[in-house]
Image (cartoon, rainbow, N blue to C red; front, top):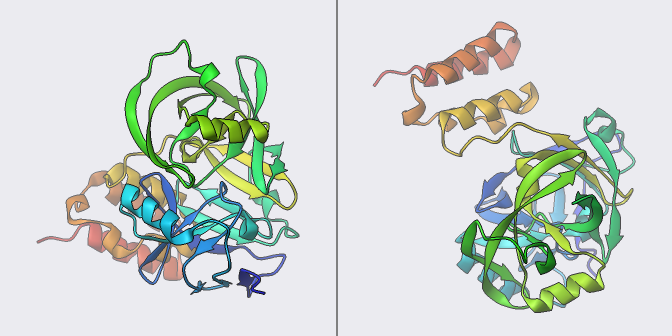
Length: 318
């Protein structure tokens, strides 16, 4: 029987880096033109074929769920051309760090000490059916919330919104059991890791509400949480570390380029900030030029050389 995945060239003292992109509110890892969603709300990895990354191999296996139909529905809703979903059967064996500012993932074995290098508030996780649950506070009451990085909409029990007016209406979403549906969004103040946050929540169809009740959960936290925190998650050791971050700037803007550039460490700079990331519209932008110049001043060797190449690109003349 297939193990579902194999991981190579990874030891207890090493983190392995992978870039990701936020697309349509999903964490997308790309390989050979194919897109994969990192999904802590899926207890199974869903693939239509084997795929090998630089350090691990995911193998197609038998699934209870109709994989092709699920992926087809996701692609219809998002236009992302998703080839698979990486679920918690993989993530239970490997800790993951998600940095939304630099758009990078780090995978490591749970026996490593990489979490010691990660700042933030360390909290206990529960697990039900291999899904991570985090305790959050609303109106001075604690509630268990499923952390679902495969959901671009967060959800909450309808009892929390019965007296509220929606801030957005008819937002389209998808669930494997029911397909596409629409929900209104409501703004609610929550306390997560000692931070008061205003977050938007939808209300799931009745069938899913009953499933959540069976899991003793009233809330699903989608990728909106990554607008507020970087995350280190260890499903094997049942903890999560949340580190508050600055607001993520709008995509495809010079401000977002600078933010990602500043958050990217030297050893992955060339991979994570390629020369063509400086679009023609960004050329001669003072914030980008000054950011590169500041970094050149304290860099050396190959990093300094690459920064100088970035500067040439940022100041090129037509």
